[in-house]
Image 1: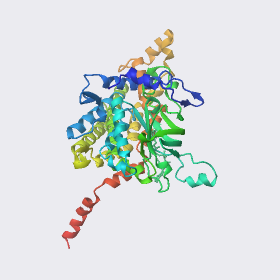
Image 2 (image 1 turned 90 degrees about the vertical axis):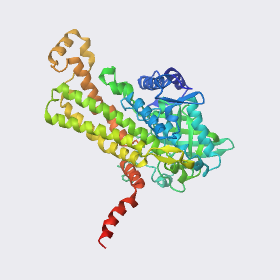
Image 3 (image 1 turned 30 degrees about the vertical axis):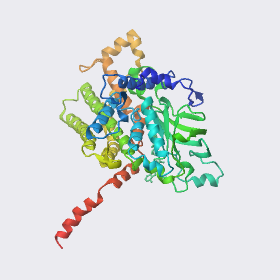
Length: 482
Ligand SMILES: Cc1cc2nc3c(=O)[nH]c(=O)nc-3n(C[C@H](O)[C@H](O)[C@H](O)COP(=O)(O)OP(=O)(O)OC[C@H]3O[C@@H](n4cnc5c(N)ncnc54)[C@H](O)[C@@H]3O)c2cc1C
């Protein structure tokens, strides 16, 4: 069943506990902090529910499922997934990192090797397959929180001060499941989602058995609350003043669990510190989700290149050779990421029993992650530079347009041969929203943290590199002269 946007919005009115400061949000679909982002998500659901959008769903035994649940058996399947990610990312200009296709990509990738989950406890592999089926059959939006809160590197410091360690852990085990308490970081999109996957993407110490819990809970489960960071959208009074902040603030929240009951069917790892991290990298789960991130970034770069060019047209600098040189560089960056993303399909990998499950090339996936990390800030800086002082020439807000006298003055003095005053104001506000606003700043952080800190990204590249092949190149030339 593919749900419509309206059905998804209805599913969010489920009594979930969301705090903005001390305010308990009654309905995330109507609250000004989340309303517009919820509409964006609803639009993504409507796109997918459209029977003519065969690029966004696949059919199995007469039933339609979101393309991001497709378990690829061929290169064409991988490409179909990629193109679905791209269409979804384009619909948000690449501003929704944890769009509904991100976490399901993790889970779909993990289904290549459910037997790995049985290494922890027999039956957990089947739990994973059942959960995958539950998500895809009900067309659910899943988010995830797979990091401990900061400062958890040294849990012994808490114990020394006789304070409880705040990191999420199992506090009790019953016949029908486990009880979890504690905090996890940082569930982007959870406010707008149906489910939260809880786990550990970073290594745990061997004795962190209670923390190794990997499970899934509905957002409205009893005892769970989402503590939202400062919402960006509430500061915006009109969409044209900050078009990205207005509709694409995907939200980030700390997840707090206080005595949350998780039935065994939704437990995937328990009491196994090593396996808790391994499930992501011994399956194509991690590469599937980070492939989506690369595709999403590609869509974002397309937007940035277009924006840069429009800015130069508006300032009249577009014909200057040095400026065209800058635009050429940006266009080359867009072509680079597009080619790198598509190359991950060309050099696909075999997974699963008999190699029937296909996965994206991991070297390619992690190289793109590193590329994105290294290029995002410089690209934003270039656009900032191209804007010059244009963003500061604008009146404080759109209210000048409501006053006929002020509007006339504005339209006279702010007019340029390239663009009339109002169109110019809209364009530069858009540029500010991705270079200078609070939304822009959050995106600078996001692109530097979504997969982990940079050392984590480089370490992934180190681990998958074919060192033997590289060493042999050197050894061969050395041996030639023996
Ligand atoms: C906007 C945003 C959205 C996010 N969304 C999600 C989400 O949806 N789900 C989720 O689970 N998580 C999410 N995260 C969390 C994200 O994965 C973490 O922030 C990231 O892994 C970094 O971990 P940390 O914040 O604990 O930083 P830390 O690990 O404390 O690192 C902070 C900095 O310290 C330095 N540092 C620390 N250790 C080392 C080291 N060993 N070597 C070198 N330098 C080091 C680095 O400069 C590093 O950047 C999100 C984060 C942000 C900012």
